Each structure stands twice: as structure tokens, then as C-alpha cells.
Image (tube, rainbow, N blue to C red):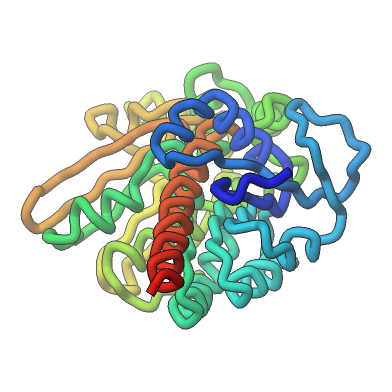
Length: 333
């Protein structure tokens, strides 16, 4: 039976990130209840197969998105499906239903972010997406709030953990590309179809999102000059290693659209980004007032991204509770 004080969440998708999110909620359940003053409940999750065995369980699964999007008891819709469709259609419907929406979908935001933010504004609801960029590094809130009095002049970093894992193994151990890619897939760092990662598209999507936040410009994927790591072989890496140069897939942008790019750069070992290894991500910002700023942290895994999504859910839950308080006060007049 529903407690009217509960905040209810519906998940669109229940894969690695969705299950990592539920694990995070289970680990933090007491802290969450203390902070919100109410319980946070996962009402149900949308999946393709309700009978599939999963590492983390939920009491209710559904194959029909309407069970989430049209349920008046669900306050927050969390989109962790990935891909453009049907995530785009579902997200628009949730915003039109005036539900708070949280997403970790970088492709969706790179392609449709400005439209979805405007739709959220028109419907008086929220669209939160901290988990879409750099996994466990809480960078979007830092940019939106901590740097709101400064001006970002350059964005540069390692935004894709799959390619960083592959390049680290190829450089450190001399392994070939296809062997390391298979290891990344077996470890869960790479998808069965790794093309979005190894082509540079994943990093480009994250760069677009960061550029919009940092530079307040209308930037799209077509504005990014992009290349990946598929062309590299261990012999080329060994040759460059002999020259003291380390390969990294670097995303970089300045406020001019002509300088937005993703591609392999050969870095000296004195560069901080050259020391970011394995599935770690990193971001370097140059700002007008603070100068050089640097963050690094995990970019892969359900718990890391799930933690970022949970932070958005907490903010969305606080908005839900504030709206309830306002409604209660207005009803008492």
C-alpha cells in the first residue's frame, strides 16, 4: 500500500546503470530517508524480458512503458535505456506529463538536449542529467553552480573509459587492439557493439553536453571533428612509446566551434592526462578566474554512474516535496 509521503520512481531500462542505481539506493537507504524525510521507492522498471535473470531484483517489472509514463503515482521517471529511440519519445512524454525526469543518456542529450530542456521549462518540471557525463565525477553541478561566477575558456579531457582501458593495456602491456577489446567486453567495460566508444562518438556526445554548459552556445554533434582508436596498432604505439609519448583519446573545445574535436593525441608523461589510466576519466578546465582545474575519477561501472543518477534523483525528489508543500499551503487558503 502506498504511503502518500513516499516519492515514487519509475525506471525506463534496468541494465547495468539501472541495477547499479538500485544497489546504490539499497546501500544508502537510511541516509536517503533521513535527508528527504520520506522514503524513496522504485515503483517499477521497464524491461524487454521480465523473466531474464538479473543481479539485482525489483518487485515489479513491466514491458509496457505506459505503466510508468501514465502512472499518476510515479513522481520521477529515470531514463537509463540508452540510444536515441525510444528514449527520446518516452522522455518527451514524461516531461509532458509534468514528471521530474532524470537521464544518463548522452546520445539523447547531444541530439535533443536543448529541445528537451525547453520542453521541461514549458511544463514547469525538471530535466536532470549529471550521470550523462564522466560517470562518477560530479562535474555538471560544479560547472552550473560552483563556476557560475567564472568563465570557462577551454575544456579538455578523457571522456571514454572503454578507449582509455584499451589504450592503457596496449601501451603498458604491448597487447593488440582486438585482444584488449575482447577483454574490455568480457569485463563489462565495452558493449557487444563497441562502435560508439571506439569511434569517438561517445566522447563527442559528452563534449557537446559540456560545451553547452560551459560556453552557453548552441553546439551539436555535427560541429565536432571526430576520430577514434580503431586505426591504432601495437607497433605504432611501441614506436611512439620509444619516443616517450603516450596515446590518449582526447576531447577538447574552446568557445569557437571550429576548435571542437575528439581524437587520439600523443602526450608527454609530464601531462596530467597522460597519467589517467584504465577505466578512469578526467577533465581539465581552464577558466578566467581560477585558472587550471582538474578532476579524475571512475568513468565505467553501474555503481559509479548509478551514484550520479541517484544524486539527480535526490534533487528531483526535493523538487517533488517542495511542490507538494506548495500545493498543501494553497489548498489550506
